Image 1: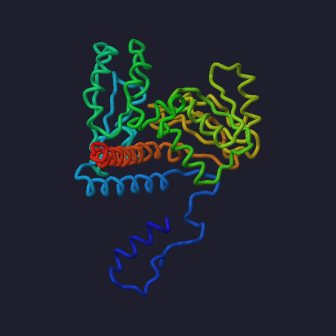
Image 2: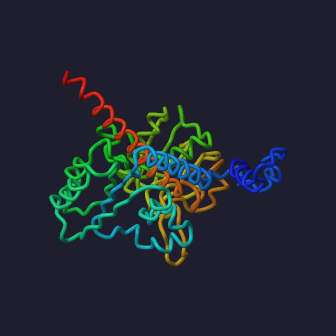
Image 3: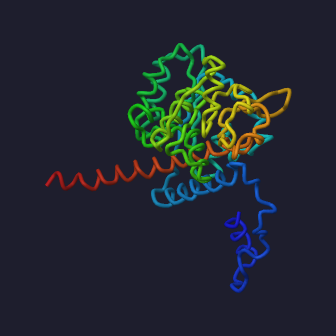
Length: 338
């Protein structure tokens, strides 16, 4: 990007003020990503850098780093190929699968608590949350939890001001939206994907992606329909074919066929699945998407890179909010005693 090029030029040239910082940058479209791609890589890099700057400033102000606790119960199926995904698409300093290392690289303290699926009860998990929740700025409970655990009780143990992955977003109104839909929305805003007054179909209804994504879109003025793989195929296909914007978050490869799309539709691919045979990620949309869509987010390189920056941005914001609140309370308390 021009911003990164400018910073690199300034670093190389040191004190030389008479040289244009954009000298040598190709400002034509020759090396730019295709205009029909909603590319998230550069946006993600900038967002994570912003979170890092905020974290460093917080540490210099308060003498500690913003902190995150991540709770996982059992082995999550989507983590099965996590090492290979890091090798192919990212690195340990910016991957969803290496949060402790992301924290180390960007100025955050991260504690990952991994609990055994068969031995952990609802009370056990809540007890672990209670032990640490007053000592961290943000808490993330990885979804899904085993069926043996009462999810509602566990989520209620997470204070709203520490809910950095938005589990209370559509109920109690968390300040912080779930990070994956937040990343998708950030990508849409950055690329001026207009949803106001448009028909948007969200494919998928999970509590951490599909449901909150639909909520965000409604808040932005879209007419939202929610489809899922349990819907009759003809009805499903008809809904997709009517949509101005399609947001896929089912995690079911090929559940949407590209030739179902309305000509000129815009497509945001959130749902991805790693395929061992292909040694890569598969999208929820199968077929020649470019032949139908005006613009679409690629897989990989679209929404995926944005989830981790959104998480750490939320943690930084939560740290500032809570520290400010506790400082205000402390400063006000002497006045109350007079």
